Image (cartoon, rainbow, N blue to C red; front, side, top):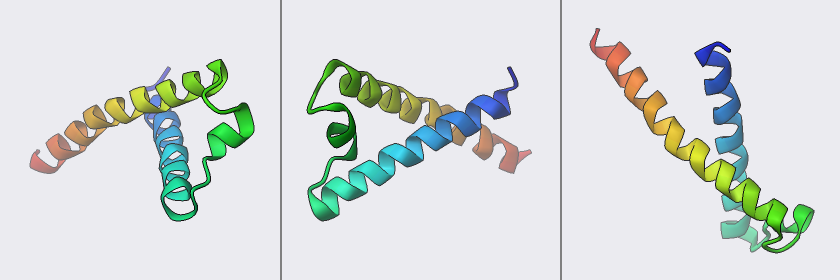
Length: 70
C-alpha cells in the first residue's frame, strides 16, 4: 500500500477525532459514546485507533518539514 494512502486514511481519522473533541468542548456531546456506547469495548478501540493515528501524524509532520528544507 502506498504511503500516501495510509497518510490520507490516518488524516481522516484524526479529523474525525478532532471533530469529536470539538463537539465535546463546545456542546458536551461525545459522538463516539453516543454511537457505540459510553466506554464500551468498541468505543475504546475507536479511541485507541484515533490516538495511534494522532501519533502517526507526528511522522507526517516530520516528513513535511523535511520536504520544506530540501
